[in-house]
Length: 438
Length: 87
Image (cartoon, rainbow over the protein chains, first blue to last red):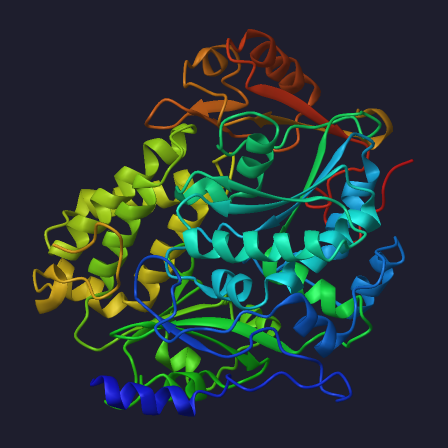
């Protein structure tokens, strides 16, 4: 694929449309425009990207209203769900927070740990004030003592944009809670909500198990929302109908494309727009990234990007990552490389994760190489069962779900590999898995 | 048998557990060790006998990684549909 063709494709991408003025009946979109970025690393766009300043935001959608507790019914009616991957209703999280009585910290989680995902960084770099408005609203509504934007320590571009935005708000003398920018470590689990909670209370940035708590206790409370969730809150609180769009990060052979599509957009349209269908359909698509799951083209060719519909088919878009692999790539080898990466990103606290993920990696590598004995294959299946649901956080569950989906979607390859006929490509990894290139 | 239809379950904080294994020695009726030496709970809702075994394990854990969670609502999965709750 040449870069010229890619530019053409980018123009055909459905998402990059300008934000509707506030007089329009169409709810404003989240992104100003789609961007193209490198396959790995920071979300620095290839073309210079606009940053929405405070007065631009106010001009587009009006000033931020005061955050009152009535917002809980507003977000419930709007059906606002989390956009960090788990799709939990935001109102349920607010109710749970309100049951406690201790000092409250509200967090805008911008630590996008999934290595392929870049939609949160892109959103914060283009519309920092929309995210900060959402954070201020949640902090006011719930009477928070502290409001924090949490970022990976190595996300320098996003941090610079947010620092600029915070300075703008300070200069504008907005009446709002103090918003802090906190940069955590850069590792994978730094974006996990219990790890953030622990770090903000002076502990290490590591996940914790949820232990039972006396609801009347005065223990500190922490509410963690994904930054896209808060950006949507900022629009819903202004009286806009909930925006029926999704932010996607699509991996192409040369880049990642981040853009916005109407919910319900056919998967075919998105893959066509990103150049994936030029040489026929992909072999399979990794949905949700490295902690996500494989989907076959047969399942996806008539599917749409709509989370409830995907769930009904046993799939999930997670945090909006779409990573197809071409025919010729070996799905088992790709999965083995991802499993090795997930094992290396374990917090090394829980036995089933610390020992289980390396064991799963060994099993997947043997399967990919075509020399897995009957005993090793049985052990792989046994370990999947053994690891599932036994960590303090869901990190190991991401690995087991990924492998289980690989064994199903690449079933034909499993048979061939076991018969001593591994794929030609099983030595090469097409996904940009950190440490996966040989 | 169960007071007010409450159910008790044994829970593990996997981050606190170091795989010492005392629990499985003391309460083999509710726990077993996986191939790496970390406990797996084998019983969902504990009977009275299993509850006392579970309590032994909770008390003995050097890492305080175990606890018993008691809920007032009886477990739905335990009861076949259509069966009424004995009062």
